[in-house]
Image (cartoon, rainbow, N blue to C red; front, side):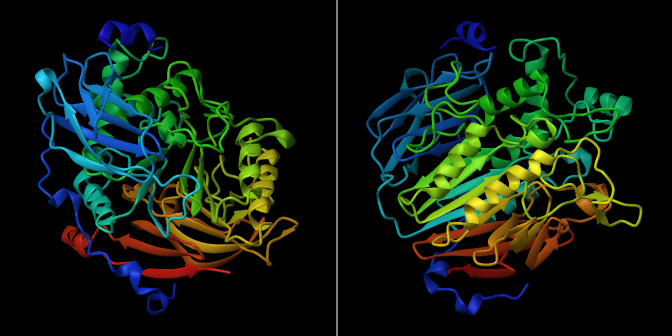
Length: 529
């Protein structure tokens, strides 16, 4: 596709001693230390399923000739994702499940654009793999100029996670911070002036591509993504889930401004960021093709922007869902996720063709920081405590009703380990939900995890920004193993046929950056029946 065609169509206590030895058998290997030659690449982020590979990539200079991805003996022509020739995607189909493929990118006259590398497809949906190791993290975005930890520190934390050789990585929301309308976080006039100096401002009456908006988006979003990931994830499939800041605003509701549901322009910014920088979700045999924001005409067949699946044989199925794009403000019938999405999640919770079924929402069950766009009605009172005796402005009762339906679907399957892993709250935590309103989950409590943030600055911790750290909402009985820690970190999760192992890592900003390279889990536990 040439540039003209693109523009025409682009509108607690450790259990280390009890953990099986095989979990620690792998010697950590850092991809950034492998001296891999990235050539002309700026960034490269792949995802896979059992028969497809989708890669998003950008180059130092525009590619006048259409680049080609070689996947084994297959030839995949690049698709242009911007108006300048620097951003491309490669979508390989009809591959073999569970196979290592050698990949290479080639440009004009068949020249190599970077060193070849390997990437493995997932096992077939009916295969029986013995293990899936997943790396979970959240909130990796933010500009260094806003007192975030450095890009180099964030990249080093991610590389420490990659050194444990996860099969997949899941980045749960807030990849970009560039709020447009929130009175509290957009910065008003001073914030606009600050953005003018660093990237410029958006024209919300214009299209995204082919004008100044495209330039501003690349400067605003790209500088928060490409230096953090680079090409280090080239052999690790990644799954990017969007949250409020990825729509270029903070979830906030006052008489002055209600920032969500997202405006049309906010959605276009989120879609354009995803189009250029990170992969959509590939098709899954058990996820309907007609879910909202799936199978759209300006995306390749089968791709879903906001609702995805990691299906790893019959061992594990991880359902990822964005709560912002389809949220409604309809009081007792309001929802975060469209009814068709809820139906998909309910059907999969009831299915018997997979050992582990896990929820990964962009909005965390289990804890509250009193902010508006949460599942829970709790709000901060004058004593610095969460309460439900004060009405939270613009909060919707239907959101909590949907929460209870989803949580009940997980707990009711007593032959499974109920597990929800989420981010957003800039913390690391672990607990078991034993009650949600009138629902009693004590027979099969829901394990809730906050996986840990990568890029939070001093003013971004909930206790600093909101006046209260992540706390247990009044609607729940939550037995906590890890009280919420406002520290940088990530979580490794090993799915085995009969159990799930969790390893929690944390890093304090005042510690030497070199200590990241030998970071070990501060808490390890096993979930089993």
